[in-house]
Length: 331
Image (cartoon, rainbow, N blue to C red; front, top):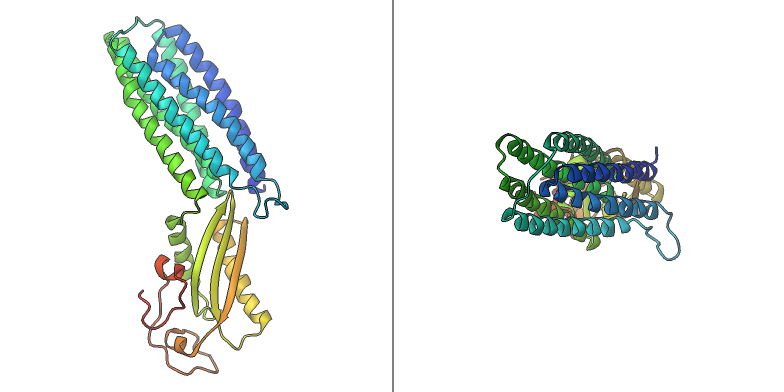
């Protein structure tokens, strides 16, 4: 299945699931009167809004490029993640505020056994759905789907905290624990929201993804061809699930246009095999210069002027530099 369509289908299920889980949490709250369950339900409202906003962003990002958006609509996923992260932070603040109020005025709780059962079911469903979203979102380079997955898993952790508190209260009748647990896990929610907002801002600002670059450089070094004397000025920009890769590839100066283009095709094939089909490659081919003979591994070169003295191992730093590599380039 095409990654964009798969992302939309999964996010549709996430949005529908969020509505069901919110309903279950509200039922559990009205049964028990627990402020901890209420805070979990408040985050459930955020899940619903964020789920449908994420679905809209995936629909928009899947639209083909047009005259007004020549690079496509993928950036909306970063905006979606930023909104979702912000809503998580707001929910965390609201949860903390409500719990502090109830801490000094604890209320009697009812039907805790049913509340524990219902909340336990939502925790299991949230965790399974969250891990699945993160796995598929990472595979398809979809920040919106990864953000939804992280949101669902963070909801799971807070729900587990609520469950722990409810079980303790059930056996001990220490009512203030209800609010204490809610306060504790509000900070977990706040941290998760911060991380999502941070990653979305990085995407909007085209911040370098060093983890992705390290992985890509490792692949290039492992499958480096003799005709690739040098690779530099490499930059990667994410537009939703599409990667835009820009680089300068140095090939033998005597190659004709077709031969040089073949090397670029081999580079593109290598990237697509490891990083997905959604790739736009803009590679400028350079002809090698005499000083690069000293770092060249092409042993059958008919015009070699100097023996190879050193092999440059590509790193994130030297492959991102806009300077051609030479004998003094650090490994």
